[in-house]
Each structure stands twice: as structure tokens, then as C-alpha cells.
Length: 83
Image (cartoon, rainbow, N blue to C red):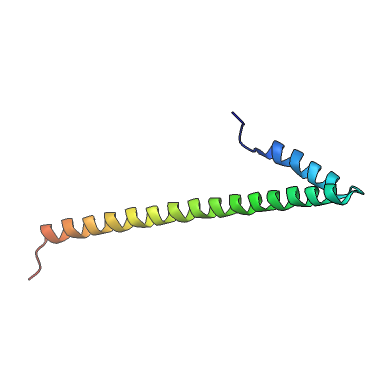
């Protein structure tokens, strides 16, 4: 099984992309560019994933706070009926 792309592996790929991208042969330059483009996309996807996780955590916190506030209001109104 292949391990996930960690930062060390991405750096190796960045080096390959840069090296191939500066080669005299057109096919190798194209391969280097492709590697570079894919790594940039991986970087963007990692940022998107991080933001989505942060948004999800914030939404969960908001839901918990809202639910706790509703439960507290219900308990208070049961204990003190309004006239």
C-alpha cells in the first residue's frame, strides 16, 4: 500500500517538478509543469479541507450553544410561569 503524500513527499515532488520544468526537452518540461500544477492543486485542496473543518467546528459550536440556550430558557420558563 502506498503511504499518503506527506509534506516531505510533496517537497520531493516539487523538486522533481522544478527540475523537469527546466529541462531542455519539451516532453520533460511538460511533465515538470504537470507535477507542479498537481502539487498546487493539492495545496489548494488542503486549504479548502482545513477551512471546511473549521467551518464545521464553528457550526457545531453554534449548534451546541444554541441548543444549550434553548434548554436553559425552557428550564427557566418551567420554573417561573409568566402571569
